[in-house]
Length: 438
Image (cartoon, rainbow, N blue to C red; front, side, top):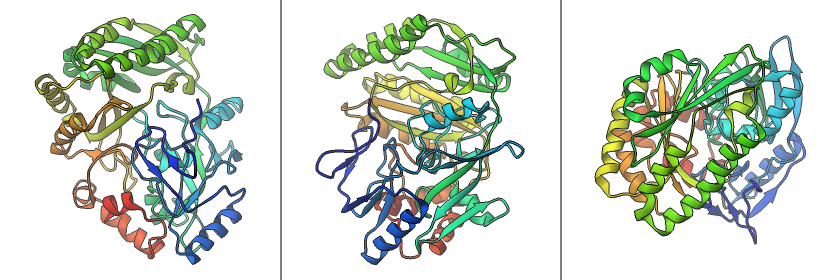
């Protein structure tokens, strides 16, 4: 499947198909100098500027009617510093290419999300994350970055250089400038053992604290209309490697998770009344399994079934109550929800607009099959999330504005003040940023 989001006659579309835009101009710079020149020219011509990766965000965070910058030519590893344990990559590098290249060098990121189609700059700018007890989002692993600012100059920042920019720009929403390169902390390649097993939701909720404390990476999927979940624990392992067998791998990941899942979604879209029965069958089709492999083969999985998603980070101690309220809401609402709810965690970090900024967080993600009306479900879920001071994922559907966000992010004002300094003319503005940053 092609993951670059684009369309006919100059219309840009995102991966989820729910956002489109018609930029006045598109460029694909082959160097940082070319990108900086394009930014200066756009400013002269009175055009707003946005960079877009693979369009994996469900919000209009990258949409523009001005200049659209595509970073496809800014890819690859610039530098590996084994002594410092860092790797510097060009901003347009897709995560999947980075993961494969690092593995070849005997290196790996410490943690990652479950999709690796995005570019490194798109993933980090929106706060993409996996699940972890000690290790946070992809952005929390950033050690330095290079940014083209509104006046066309190139700013390098780290904890030592321009530290106030570094504190914010790791998750910059595209509001502070165009990221051109990122330096990540990496470590020697290691093995993870994944243990997947079905477990009743009530038991998961009752044992949340232990499950979180006993596993480096714990997550689970709850199937609405059922009391069932599928849990996944990833922990470091001394080996040996025991990858998922080709046949069972194909059966579990392709046939069940993508093939049958796609058919089930289509049936559910055509006949919503069948969804609870389908959910019960889906939740029972998964069996326990265990496998050991290098990190990106354990953390990530292909996503061929297109969907729309909303995800909120709530304080970790509010997770059990949030899940109970979500279950009650689905049971009472008459809604038919065909996609599982995904739950993950992250430790507190020090990035101004990180969804885990300053607090241990739990992520609850609700999904709907692409093309299915999702508003009623998402609106009801969002009401629950916001009652717990939830912070919406920047790249996923939500209705929050600057007023709400300033209340749940203690360092919100620090970010907007930096933006006033770096982009006083709002060259990188669009409708989405106007709503969430004011």
